[in-house]
Each structure stands twice: as structure tokens, then as C-alpha cells.
Length: 180
Image (tube, rainbow, N blue to C red):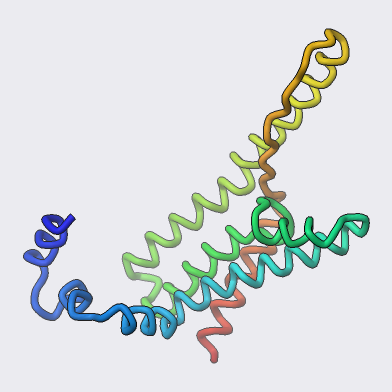
């Protein structure tokens, strides 16, 4: 690891961010992280999306226990709004605002956001629907044959509306951080 760090250091001049990073103490690094509006808007969008997800869960599932709502906020995937979408859109928007939309950082974050958004609504959702179909088929087969069936985990993806709402939430939070 130190060899890689040395190579990067050798490639950069004295005024580079990497050289400055070496001089930074842990407390200074943590403080600067929490002063960074890109980081703050991204983390805030994650937290707000997860809290909203719990609120929507409580509204739509009145018969559920409070622990289920907390578990939804912390562990479960899927649901309204998409926190993945909120995070990547807040990240890309913040970078676009602070670094400019012509920067390499923005282009990378935009491509990253597009992949995550596509995955949320496409691949993960399709995998979840296939798992649900397999579980239904397995239960029916178990009834007919008397054999034991173990369900596969149904990873829930997002509907297009959940991804859209998460994306708008992330963009709005990033803009709010810029305006503050």
C-alpha cells in the first residue's frame, strides 16, 4: 500500500491534494469532511430518504409493528423513496454545483448516478420479481409433491416512481445546501 502511495506522491507536485493529505491529522480530516457541502448534502439525502421511507411504510402498513418500520429504515431495500437515487443525485448535483458540470468529477458522478438509477429500477427489480415467481412456483410444487421448499430471498428493487421521487429529493437537498 505504501508503494502505491509513494508512486502517486512522486507523480504529484508539492501543492497537490495528496501531499496535503499526508500532513493532515485525523481530527482535521474528519472536521474537513463534515465541512464539505458535497459530503453533507449526500449524507443528508440518505438520512432524509430513509426517514421518509419509514414514514411511508408506517402510513401504508398500519398493521405492522414499530420494529418493522425501524428495520425498513435501517436494513431493507426498496420502498418509497429510493435512497440510492437520492444519494447519487445529491452527489452528482453537488459536484456539478461546486466543481462545475464540465469537470471530470461531475462526469464520473453523472455516469455513476445513471448506472445506479438504471440498476435500481431495472436489474434489482427484475431479480426481485423473478425471486417472487420462483417462491410461488416452489410453494406450489411443495404442496403437490410434499417435498420441503426453502424460499429464496426476494430483494426488492424500485418502481420508476420511487426512483423519480428519490432523485428529486437528492437534487433538492443538494440545491438547498448550495443556497444555505
